[in-house]
Length: 542
Ligand SMILES: Cc1cc2nc3c(=O)[nH]c(=O)nc-3n(C[C@H](O)[C@H](O)[C@H](O)COP(=O)(O)OP(=O)(O)OC[C@H]3O[C@@H](n4cnc5c(N)ncnc54)[C@H](O)[C@@H]3O)c2cc1C
Figure (cartoon, helix red, strand yellow):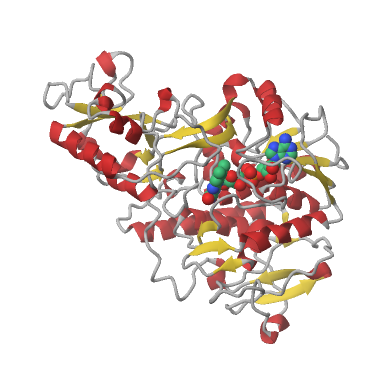
């Protein structure tokens, strides 16, 4: 690869749009290939770039919620999509919900008019031998490209369906109500077993029957695979079905009673440090809140911290721990990167994040610089660590979650205070990484929350007084001269004592006051709820 080479970005979804922008603003020529509207996916409805396929929410804005912290990190790294999402925000309480049509229309305009980006409306069906390429074709990658990726990686390493069971942190399991053993005592006792009495099983079974599931999308499988049947489907077949399936107690003896339990939920370690455990065979389509409530009926899991809840839906993703380096480059190939949901992260913000990292790292590689690798104490770094180091045998897609961050040295009982500390550490460490890397970042304005809906205007007019202040710089962040775009971006409004300035082509730079940099907002700091028990806590149904 040479510095002057054009980069191909496959897929103009959330990740591809972010990656293309990160390259283009740094002066790299990009060919952004998007197959829509000529050929579409079963979920997209327009030909616009960065279309939000289902919910219009990018989840929480609070940095004490995983998705909120991830967004803050992305903002500090100059994410275009997060900045634009704020501009097209709709009133939605603590969440960042956007006017999806206007958002994606605007992203399409920005990217297609950028002098460094050539938008090619075409399905990609082959990959270049040496030209740099970022594959960001998403969970609904076209069949022909899927076949090409399968050939590149091998049949075993590309998946088309998620059947995810929930994952809990090891520290939140009540070990006093478990025993460690493998069935029939074979091999090392790697599993944590959670025994249930007949009454406990009955309670769990009845709760499952009453719970509500997410409806399936039309294009998803008509029938579930028998091998990965959702737990609630199994329960609906007959009462004993779970005891002959994932909850079977055979070959297990509880040392406390010296007897075989009535039923057993098995927890399997998910990472080398055994900090996360997966509920074996608990793939499910139950609604998020129902999952938390019902799985907490298992005596050892009454206080469980879910880092991921279960799901079962169509999704194309690769076995990243086997194939990807931390930079998102394909191992053994110098010109291929993967980005977005394909790398095994889930969610809009996570997809944007994986587009941003791929874009930055292709740039760094082209310039012969060190790769950008946010530390694992950041939400971004913890996701990258997870997808590249978790056991490839049990790899399943992951959302951002506080459970992925390494524990703090000091023990804290108050969950919200603990998350505040973790968020502070994450942003501090990210700042250090940015400063040490010497990278240049184009920062965007930080509009405040919309107070009431306005059908036409994305954000309020900038007040004259705030426009007067000269821009400052975040310590350690060198700002880069933004590229010109022909469309002046709509002016934006700042509620805090921030400063804002227009530069070439309507781009703005902004430095908020300290309060806004920490992500705390005066009127909400007291309201922030500890709702991120799981990464999916504020995630809408997909
Ligand atoms: C049905 C569904 C609903 C979802 N709902 C939510 C939700 O509500 N909230 C949430 O947080 N996450 C949701 N997700 C998960 C995920 O966050 C989104 O799918 C997200 O858009 C993924 O971003 P991406 O950039 O990886 O892929 P996408 O945004 O899907 O972008 C991929 C792009 O590549 C294009 N493409 C595919 N193949 C080719 C090819 N061969 N050549 C050229 N272009 C190609 C596609 O047309 C598409 O534009 C959902 C996923 C699905 C499948």
